[in-house]
Length: 410
Image 1 (cartoon, rainbow, N blue to C red):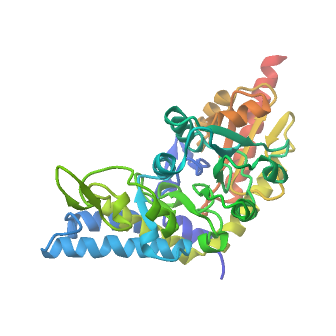
Image 2 (image 1 turned 45 degrees about the vertical axis):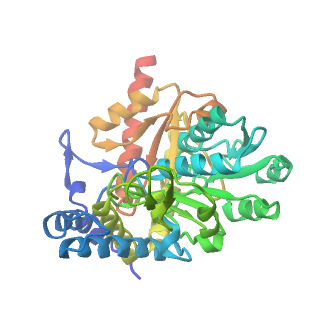
């Protein structure tokens, strides 16, 4: 199938925006992606034509909305190849999904002295929830390191596992380094010891094919807004056996079977973990986004983005003083860098005046910054609609900023 970049870009009206008189070059996709017309149209249609609270309603609109919401769950199931739709839990995003597991798994499966293994390249969303657990249980967080290239040292994992290890939680793709971690290998090692694994898929689902059954992941989390869907909706996949074992994360309506003042019994999956009115508008818009991605083809997207990352890396390296962080053999979607002593905020601010949107700072990954001995980085991250011409504008912009600061030094 031919990759029609012009047609893809035409589906994203925001790409026609002018910023300070310059055409927008949007390279902040790891933070959030732009939304195609079909997703925004789905949101409008749902509010104007099908808006009613889901589940238990006997009237027509409620039934239509319920069917659409549950059809969205099936769309997610197919997209990640979960075994059953009731293994798909709707959340507010990756962060809430991980917090759900940390809370429910921690309360029911962890005891004082137990250990959780994470990697050194995790987003704060896969660090802080486990530290919150440690405030309740005397649980220790152990860290699997990465090397200077940003490659996770998986060969050390076996030696870190012991009788106290209760769970391993690891990102599939680093939001800062772009490293694609061998999570299938990690899961195989963990399962050989009877240890479950949670995979943070926030940065992998938009860029590479994900099959949770092939990975054999016990839990898998991702966010809608990073895969061309709306904000405020996300997914936690969990194997049925594990979800059945865990207590509810929150209490309220829709997650109960029978309530008395003396005792409450809980609903079956997936509703046990979906307290309150779900984001039934967001779920259907997320499903629309996944259908859009499928129509383009995730393998086609991956190939296009790989070309952009490779080309951008090659061109940026020609700039004097360029330092790129993360050059693992398997890499996806983003490049983080610094140039000489130019502060990342200065670089990002001036690039913005040229119409180029990049992310600056610690990217919610301060341990990664600490590992490289820096306070922050500039990150350019790519999506299906970005072009080589936009990479050229980024490179020219970075060169312009570099020359400006070099003149100041002289």
